[in-house]
Length: 365
Image 1: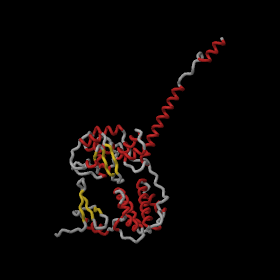
Image 2: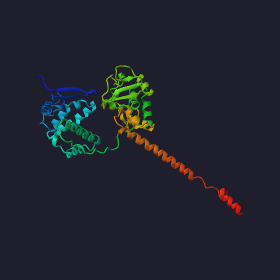
Image 3: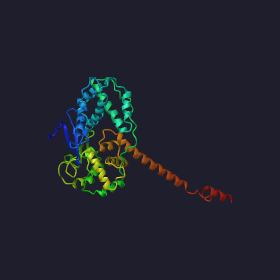
Image 4: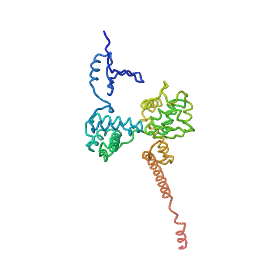
């Protein structure tokens, strides 16, 4: 019996050894198949996948001045090419979905109400809602400059209210417990030091290498912002670096000597937390960066200093740390004043037989 040939069928193996099958055609998003070629019903699923048309944002053919067309023009622009890689990835994901769902609408008549509806659609995840709003606003800022549209429908649309941050900063006790479980000379401890001592993001932890180390500093262009950051190497971080085998440029690698992915390092940290008995604490790798920012503020660092250390382009995020530290400082001062007042009030009044009053009484006798 002749073997069936499946065009555009792609076999992919994950880092965990799991085999996945996809249909991938030029200019189309890949379609994952649930069955394998050995399973009954695979041929039907394969043929159905071939009928699925889900073109990538950069290849969608749409009418001029439609929303999909404007997004395509934006993706092909020099302005978009100059954005940080992380920003490009994020906007491609968000605007690509907009193009697929509403690409046929006229970009010139898109209303603020429609943008609000898109924001509210993502209300369960305020961060995603605000990223959507930011991406649409950036699209139209460019579109106005390019002369494709005349007004920005995202202007005036309020950001979604952010809830309490899910990135919990690690407490000193939690950090000590983790370090006891993962001593210097282990990969978990090096990752810990890069996240806490250097306050790196995940995307920088997985890409930092020995080529970035010079004269006691790590000089690296941030993956998220495409901005350089100078990080002094603390004795703790230096000890962690020196204790690791010097194989390849990457400081952080898997057990197989390969660099971690951004998601992969997050998953690895969860395994390391479990090994340290901290799996139920709700901690994450990013929480170490938050702990570092909080410690800087507690130590009296200014917003500008914290922004420079964390690699922020502005002081907005740094102000969160300093405001929190200021509240603690003011609370301590208030309690100290309160205790001082209480101590004064607890002193017994002067005796009636001393001082001027006592003297007058003796004279009257």
